[in-house]
Length: 305
Image (cartoon, rainbow, N blue to C red; front, side, top):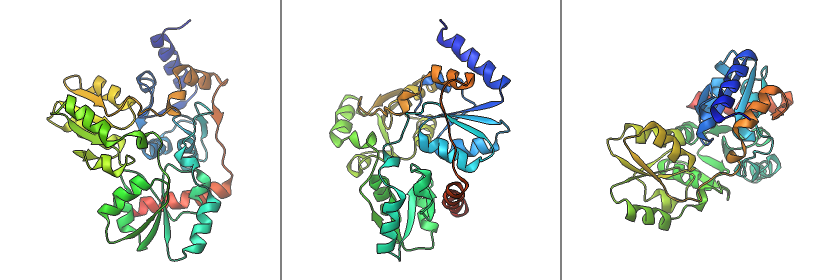
């Protein structure tokens, strides 16, 4: 039986021995953070994977993130640390549904959130992240844009880009949508001096109560750089813990104890260890047609952003 520290040390030894880069999404637990080569959001991790010289990449996140790594690093072996770790939002729409919408609305371009499957990306014109969405949508040539799948993020973008005609589709993150204005008001009553920072995947009425709205990394930067000492966090609750580790002179409170992504929580430190032993995880493979078509909308994001 190994302690957490002993298991971490063994993981670090094995990843060096086997030429493996470990990518860890910000929503993973802190014990997994501590063995990472890179921690960040889904797209940022994919870029780091492409820059890495390692021959193998382990993605501690959900399936669409591992697929994005494979899209950008086709020559690398990409392993999803837990094969059951899916993203419910990424599975809400498929390529056939969006293709039918494009036929019905031929004068609309399609912008997809990066939280989508590689298959859906093949029929989209541009990809966006929560941090780049406003800039990408502004820079798209099309005036009429279908935004999928997160209607809350889409509405937040639409409010900042009124010159575009943005059509939203009813989808979104089941974790962030749990948060309500009553949740924010209840925590604010307990901590009246705390600043409120929430993710744009939250409902618009929740975002309206925030002092800051932005991506996960944006929220963390906001809290790090602020002179304030108390913060109410409206995104996956692991961020509260990570900020507590990093900013020990500040206090952080979750908007709700229910803001937990159960798919992210599937990955454990032993999962990472099993991947390195070759007895766990799932190798991600994409056929060339899917990968090349999916990469096109990511390339558009890079050119516009």
